[in-house]
Image (cartoon, rainbow, N blue to C red):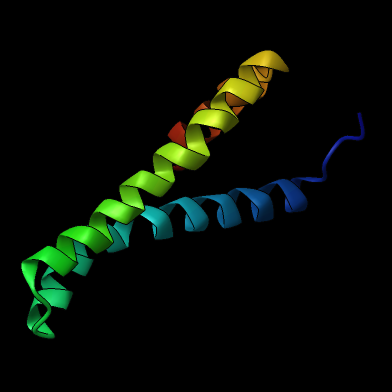
Length: 86
């Protein structure tokens, strides 16, 4: 496997952190924002619930696929990188 340059590694790390941060920061902000726009609680619940449903629908098969391909080593490296960044 080809070694990544330090600059490429840092860029990939920054992009990854920004990506995951964007996925989780809007959820607590979205419900109050929709409420301020006058949406009903049922519609807000449907929107937030659909986010959770998509997470389960997409992540569960990806985790099973990852386990079958034995990608846990890469997962450990990713977790260590995340700890270093935070």
